[in-house]
Image (cartoon, helix red, strand yellow):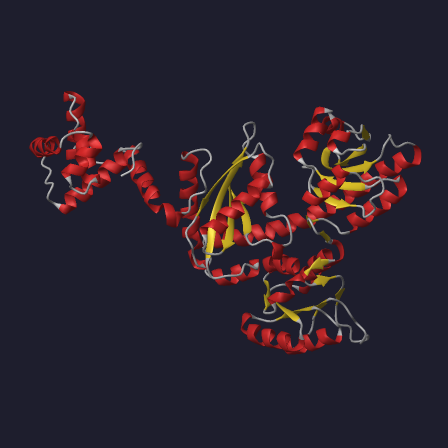
Amino acid sequence: MIRLDRLVNVLGGYGVRLCGRPEMRAAQLRSVAMPDPTDERVQGDVLMAIGAPSVTEAVRWAVSARATVVLARAGAEAAREASSAGESEGVAVMLVDPAVSWSQLAGVVYGLVLEGSETEAGRGPTDLFALADSLADVVGGAVTIEDRLSRVLAYSRSQQAGDPARLETILVRQVPGRLRELFQSRGVFDRLAASDEPVFVEQDPAHGLTGRMAVAVRAGREVLGSVWVTCGSPLTGARLGALSDGARTVALHLLRSRASADLERQVESDLAIRLLEGSADAATVLSQLGVAGETLRVIAVRAHTEEERHAALLLAFERATTGFGWSRPGRSTLLGNTLYTILPGEDADAARAWVSALESALPAQVRLLAGIGAPARASELPASRQEADECLALREAGPPHAAPPAYDESWDDILLRRLRAAARTGRTPARGPVGALRRHDTSHGTHYMATLRAWLEAQGDPAVAAERLGVHPNTVRNRLRKITQITPLDLDDARQRLAMIITLAALEDDRPL
């Protein structure tokens, strides 16, 4: 069982698009059917209308099959017919590009619907909850299944032998930090990483812990997660064997879920890259991604820890793409050492809130930095990506705890960074008047550069400039007169004043204009 939203996201990479009825993206799909001339009783949530002479006829077949969604082969010109027919009959219509073979689609659709189950927490089979219930009945304790970062994937309904620590873990969907520290100090995680044998954790009333039996969930040498059972004493005999067998069954479920999730991530990533690099039909690609709204922003993110610079970024990408497509506002991809997310909405604070939510989902030791591009239409996303990159560079050079900058709010700082970058490559005129003033100040101990800067900042007001410099206004006037004698500057020329402002901004890294 999967949701229609996921089917739309994955098949979008195969040239299949949903026509209208966006409200149906949350519909559950449990079965697949194909037309059979010898059997009029064909039924299924997904109907692959192979051989339908028209989209309208395909929709009629879907109504007869009691299908939620029908896949019909037709070109883009049939989109209006598909939307109209679907609306009138209450069926979601997905148009299949004529160049795509039915056999290729059938494998993907059957694989997703019949094998790709999901959980409330994101990706992962729903029968993990059933497995947790079954295991709890056998071992006689409350069961929790967690991933390798101690996030809750599933749990048993039974509260038999439950305790406050388990209840808190389920409520926040991950093991609280204080419990992780307790397990870490007792060496529980090290023992789980080193051995397949279940580990007993003694009770700790101060932490609301009545006792635990834990076992690692593995695929070969890789730890995928863990299974935890509340118990007052170590499990033995058949109950201990059931826990070990349960961990192996969980591993199979998680591997299947990972394969399905990786396919969806790849499709999402490929479509997002097309938008960020420029697509001739950006609106269509955006529709395939299932992103609503005409105004978008690109967010550029980098993440690292002190010890490792790459694993944290991959973890950030995993968290950014975890969960149902319809429940996530943005769509993400990895390019080089940067995570890019296309987020609908014009408000920069909403983008910052998304960054904050991503950061809170990562381990505390991960340092996450982000930059936000200006609002853009679908065709303007490459420009928004460049703006996000520049804002990210601005954030990396800024104070440690500053908020992510947005281009439309920080364009002036970014312009100055561009000028300074040009200056560092030797593209500012070293033989110009400003360069001459710098050399004069160095040789004679004068303060003409500072005076010129203060006067320009004060928009030509000697009194304001004098106040900034801590001198008398006449001193400023005398220095300005000397400046015109030393250099050919014409302080009354507006173009020269603008050129001086630009040059000073490019040369000074430590003071804004």
